[in-house]
Image 1 (cartoon, rainbow, N blue to C red):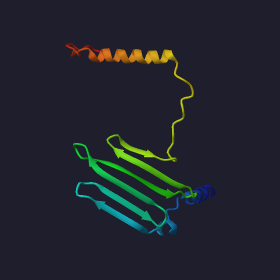
Image 2 (cartoon, rainbow, N blue to C red):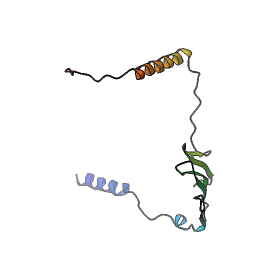
Image 3 (tube, one colour):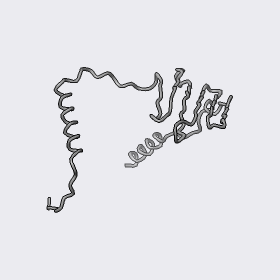
Image 4 (spheres, one colour):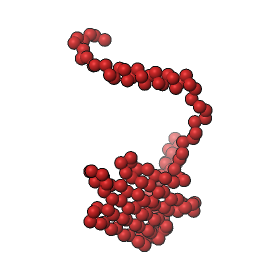
Length: 145
């Protein structure tokens, strides 16, 4: 029994995660460039670059009646395997829209949708439209289920 307990204790100690400090490579980066400019009309540009290859650039300006910000930019870095990674993006009234080779893409639909399925979808859409146009009446009495 003592041997089993000792073996269990050794397994637990060996499985303990190592929460040591990050490698010196991660701590060795320096900021090479960090620029941020704001114009009187609210437009801005931001650029940043570090010694470990991270680059970021963004520009934006207020647009529309509520001065929502339209931002465009990119960021890039080198993956641990040495692959250069770059992401371009636009952020506007349609949301954040990234563009990059690293982003997953949904596969093409393997075959066309049969016409009877499209007809059924259209029929359901029309039925939903008819139901939504009918006046809703509040129930005047309640029954036990």
